[in-house]
Amino acid sequence: MDIEGFIEAQRADGYSRNTIGARVRCIKAIARHAGTAAGKLTLDSVVAYFADRELRPWSRRTYLNHLKVFGKWLGVDLIEGIRKPPAPRSTPDPLSEQDLKKLVDAEQGPRKLWVLLGAFCGLRAHETAKLSAADVITGDGGEIVLRVTGKGGRTDVVPVPPVVLEALDLEKSGPLWPGVRPERVSRAVAVAAAKLGIRMRYHQLRHRYGTAVYRSSGRDLLLTQRLMRHSSPATTAGYAAVADDQMHVVAYALPGADPQGTRSASKRRSSQPCSTCEPVRQSRATKN
Image (cartoon, rainbow, N blue to C red; front, side, top):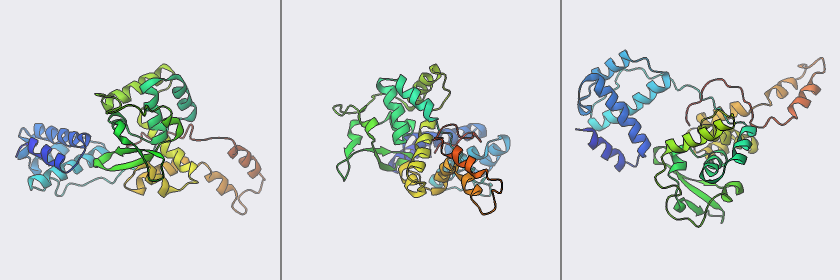
């Protein structure tokens, strides 16, 4: 069995080009390490690879997931007995509202729309890049929505706020940006931001969307999960952790917790607009 057969099978199963590409790169890397063809990989080859490579927990989990899928296709268990690290907790890193406003005000054309799609629709870079005019559709209630095919080939509809709708060219047909790759979307936005003194990654726009949705929805975790198109509420919970800036107010309100009367000062501080800006940077977020 060769890797081309695996690719064909993955396409037939409806997996996205990005997912297939990541799996193939992983498999080829391990095959090179073993000095063998991908179709001849064995459990011993995989064990030797992991023994020689110091991978981060998230990378290790991802590789094992890829190998599980490839092994199933081969008819061989390639990960038997190999410990799979627990999923590290995601810590989102949303772009601040001030930086978002600076970026939106400064940009025009496709780059501005790319920023808006990330910040107000929660699109990932690869979802933005492949967006087509045919994906701009009318929802059941008569409103304009986006049909978005994301991770694992899953398709959802996403509301389109007026700020995004105004920037869309509804007269266009076919791909909105023919030939544009996800890397170009990410790089173009990052470069534009750097010129304004903003250091960012495109995925921070999606993080901003998730954090803002959670707050605007009255901290409704399930609604946030749905709009973020997460398969698990555990992933969405990271955005709740970033957004819960009122925890100190609740703690101060406990009976007997504020004998010196500092609670009023806390209330004054909490009434100031903190929005989604300047969250505590705990660690680099995973791409969800």
